[in-house]
Structures are given as C-alpha cells and as structure tokens.
Picture 1 (cartoon, rainbow, N blue to C red):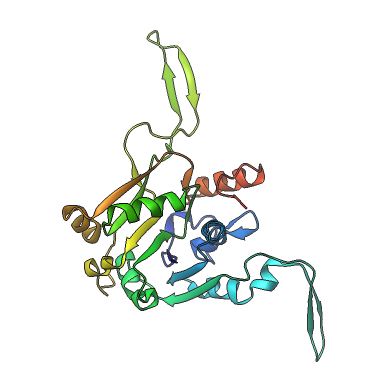
Picture 2 (cartoon, helix red, strand yellow; picture 1 turned 135 degrees about the vertical axis):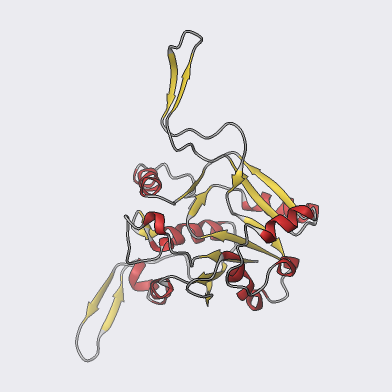
Length: 260
C-alpha cells in the first residue's frame, strides 16, 4: 500500500532554522524529519512512498540518491579508481521511493492530483504531510477506514497548546502549571489520512487547489469524511520552538514515534 507525502511547501514560518533546505529535510537528531516519518510507516510494513516535491525538491532527491553515503559510516579511497568501503548497515534496503515533481508553487490539492498515475489500480492509499510526527496506530487507522467504506479518513488530534496553562483553585491559588498542554476540547486534522481512489473525483490539476478547503468540505458535505481519534502523541514542526521540542524528545531518548 502506497504512502503519499506532501513535501513541496515553502515552510516560511521555520526559515529561522534553515533557509537552504526544504522543511522535510530539517533534521531531528542527525536525520531529516521526513526520514523519521518514512521510518515510522515502514515499521508497520508500508514501504512504498510517493514524495510530492516542490520547493528545493532536489535536496530531497539528493539525500536518497546518495542514501548509503548519507546514512552509513564509510571510507573513501581517492584517486583515479576511487572506491568506497562501508562499515555499517541500515534496514531500509526494501524501501521504494518515487519522486514526483509537482510544481514550485502548487498547493496541496494540485500536488495530490499530479501523482494520480503513480497510484495505479490501488483501491486505498495513505496520505500525510512531510513535517509532522506522531505515534498513530496505522493499522487501526486503516482498519477503521476499510470498515466504513467512505472516501477519506482523517486523524483528529488534540493540538498542544502554544502557551502555558494555569490551573487555580477558587481562591486563585495556582494548583498546576503545564508548559505546553494539549487542549482538552476540540480536535484538528493531524494529517495521517487514508484515502480511497475516489478521492481523485474531488480534485483536479488546478495548481491553486487547496486540498484542505473545497475538496475536504465537499467530502464532508457528501458524508464521505470520517474521523479517526488519536489522543496520544502528535507534533507538527511549524516553528523553531516545534523543532526544538522534537529534538529535545529525541536527545532525551523519549521520542514516542521512534518505535524501531
């Protein structure tokens, strides 16, 4: 089963971390957040990826075209007959990655439409963004999707708050302070979609088409949009602070998405 990952946005809100690579290539630890996301899907057995490229997409291609050198210890012998000796291994030998040039300024709906030919005859496929991580049970998500027979299943998450939360007793004495709590009410889309191929009936090649607007609104109106509730870890990487949080979790050995 294929996984489409949207990797083409400009990432303007996180330019203070890096301006010379696209957001999916910004590292968490020593490897790009995109790698962490793909590794997570692969742990569930989903190892065929379609990457929708746009802004600075060549750097994503270069990372995978030089994957051995980028991820393994090696020794290079220089000269006319240059050779490379690798000293470590990896477990990604069976990944299949398709790079789709979907346009520099194309919006999300247009990007999805442009990779239709790579879906083939598959009835269902995963869809997500290249800048968010979570510990979603992908098998449970897929099972729910298949059980209801609707076109689109979206993972609904409780977003972390942007500011500290103060809890006080009736006298005004603070009883609890949470630096970055999750909201207790309401959900937002956390990405991690599962789609039936009929999704393409709701989108076209219009490069200005935003998937999260007219297509998803039409799906909801036609009762073809179903919620999968996820109350555990989820974190997007929109800002410098988000990037710091993900790296802190990684550095402390407390990264919930790292199930490998």
